[in-house]
Length: 356
Image (cartoon, rainbow, N blue to C red; front, side, top):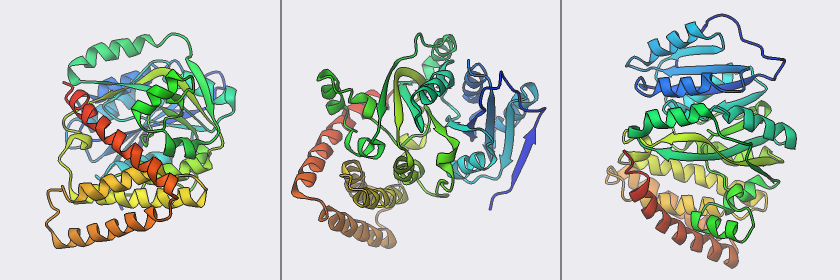
């Protein structure tokens, strides 16, 4: 188990008896981008924060940066631990969080100044378990521009849509083309879109009781998403861009993928697939994730290893067995969405992942 060292500078700051929000930021070798992220959190219009920076064994200047920020602001908690990966860092943050509400941020992204204020107000006023909002993508060349825009804060509070079937929405609404079509038909389909990321969201802390990210695995967000959505009775979506996601060539998303990456995605998809069947929900997204990951295993640079080929055979059998549990209508709908999503991914790869 990784050793953790926690440092607190001063005492937690109180602001007009507002509930405490804990925001967890896993930090790993991010000295170039970390100041943009942390500054955007420090400048939040919602001020009663516990900002947990988990230094996951960084080997650059990130640890010193974390400590410097903590020495300047009493709301910051710094935890230095041996490198254990993002799941271990997120779990450490959850284990040390004291807030009634939980938020996450990646160490190279930027939050709009009103992010937590708007998410909190929407959650409380609709009595929801989680609030979420929209995000934008940007390249490294736009760091200063995006940071300035975010510091000004969005206008208004955004249109709110309440979702009372989050697990079903998560599974059924994931194709961008169909979301656009649904919005044009007045069905607020974009509001029903959930992804696996945990940033640009605000959770009631109790949702995380007994739930932690699997350590040493890819697809850690995917693994816990289904169980979280099962626990939620109501989610509110805010139609406002409150988070800015840096597209960096060095991120996991952009690296050449190993067999383990695809296999871990298969494992998480199987868990969610079975969870949906237990709750009477058509697992369209899990069908997509599983089928794409099984195919992806064969394209992995280390697929030739015998052990990997054996695991691929097992995952293929899981896909076949689970698919047989779907009705003909469910299979047709899910298969159609797979084809649509694959076409969308080609466009996404050219337009988004090439950002500079």
